[in-house]
Length: 320
Image 1 (cartoon, rainbow, N blue to C red):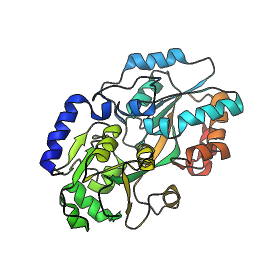
Image 2: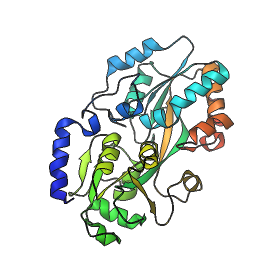
Image 3: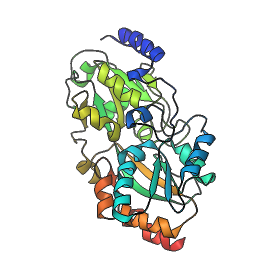
Image 4: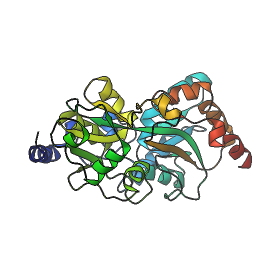
């Protein structure tokens, strides 16, 4: 498909809602499934809904531990973890998604104990708050299945992001236009992938197509020949399993959690939780479980687990 045709069809989809979901919808606690929730956006949620956060507070049972924040952690680990944690310990871990700003606001309103961030704490609106690293997020390069190259170099990916490359033929594939889909993620913060590709400047290719959510990223790449994007493995994995998108290796390194854990795969981002008031009676058992064998097993299904030692958890707990 030529870029002109892509833009025409893309414009029509914007009017209807991509992939069956209306653009600009906002996440509400208790979303029925992860696909609908993903369409709500991500790290920085425009106009954080304080009434929703207060509803979260009203839903908290006495003594329960509550999380609010980045949907990467929500759907990548914490929702499943809450089920295992409740079954194994009898304690309640309430999990709600949203964006990083939702998590920070929830802590300040005291409607949650843990706020999830998918960007570094330093330089964010959570700077100065206590925090712990809980996992690493593997970002993957996905294309439409018709794209016929297996690998892309990091330098070529940077050229593509900047608009210096515009056709797959320049990267060793069929001579067709590249439809770069990107999300202007955390535009005023330090965003890891943008830093790797664009030195953290929002200088995306003028030929690229900007979307609002991760769901739009994966849906559009699956729909349009020649399309490519970089997205969290959490959201790419279902479409890869269905054969709707292809994964590209980067500089010859396959995008696997094993390669990412070994430090060989280059496109990674941090996943942190900022802490509200330290409630040792509920927080220590949870973090012991999270950093323990069962927690690491659950987190490791879609993310790269972080050990208690890497996170500095024991030292942090003793200092609080």
